[in-house]
Image (tube, rainbow, N blue to C red; front, top):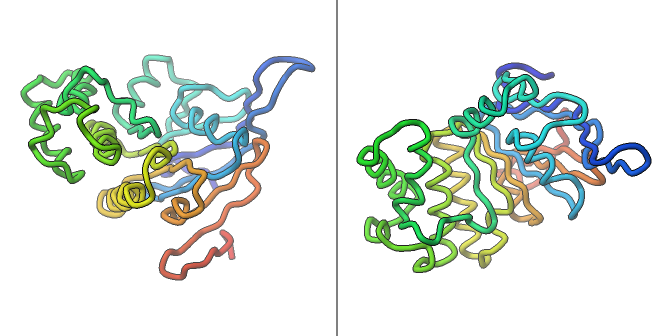
Length: 244
């Protein structure tokens, strides 16, 4: 059931590119709900629709049919400015490639989103320092550039930047894809900690079966359709179909 209390509601979403005989369906009649505070892993082979689905949830693309709602807000009825505002306040993004500005210091990389909501630089710096500490980075790195950090440290910076506006939803697109196994696990542990302690809703797109086990649920896409949706209690170490 889709309700306004869900962090994300996706209702019969279809996305086609092109028209007529040349049309390609990236998503076909996808329906799912993500309750507030849930950690959902989305898996599937390349071309299965994972990135398209994430773009729909972020309001970066619009469905050909169907509706996407973020905490009850139907993205289809919002203006471009309103969708941008919703992304700024409600959604944090983590990417595989970190997407840090190479010419900015770490502090500047984390603090810059706050300027778009009218927060002064001194306050933004103070908040950046707090969030960097929360993700396990020492004060000494704040004046460094991204190239001076390890991959794991850069991803922690990216997580800090995603959290700086205090979003309710975190979208993570292959956040461990460029990291070694040990560092990747540390990043997944951090994301899980944020989900548990802050009740932050998390959507993790991954190719890794191990990474997917961090979620409460795993949703598998194939050819633009949901083919599997299972709940995975970590303490049990096994998958239980939803509704079982």
